[in-house]
Length: 114
Length: 112
Image 1 (cartoon, rainbow over the protein chains, first blue to last red):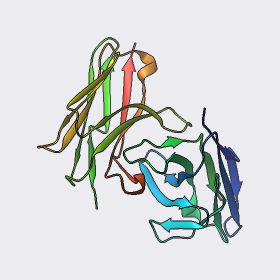
Image 2 (image 1 turned 180 degrees about the vertical axis):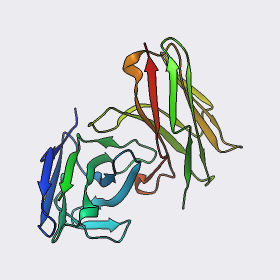
Image 3 (image 1 turned 135 degrees about the horizontal axis):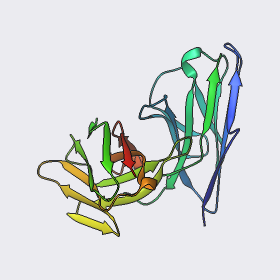
Image 4 (image 1 turned 60 degrees about the vertical axis):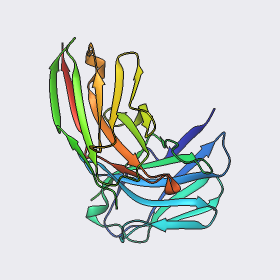
């Protein structure tokens, strides 16, 4: 069966510091991968998605970037965090070659920027 | 792009009662409609989904209905239990890269 991991689970960072969040998927190959952000009490905002190694599409211009160095690894980064980057970051995967397939979410990383 | 609206934003029901959450979408090309349950501090979990060639789907106490003409779909939970308390999200997808457009969420509170 497939499993999706995210780490760290929680992170407290000062404004201006760098960020690296990691997501890995087990038990599948060639997945679509997604990064979402969820502000407190709010809905899910799609940040990035990837259909293959090195292929990243950005949905919202912002202070963040994403990379996919391996097939089942997705990384969310920032060079300098802003207060507004605080939130709950969710990684998700879906089967790539089939349409109408659901997305499976990881446990999330809670980021607090102070 | 697609726009998904979800109502109500909060819903309180008595244990044993039914709960209904409604979503509308704007793009008739959307063909896949999942529903997620998110418990506090956790990632969303799929609870049921429906495709555009089906009008209704049921899984035990949970059902989803789809009206393609009106572009709306609904989640029905019967015989609610306290453990159903969570935030529920609907989504719509046109299948391109499986991008999902999410509703804003409904916080369901089931009172014992």
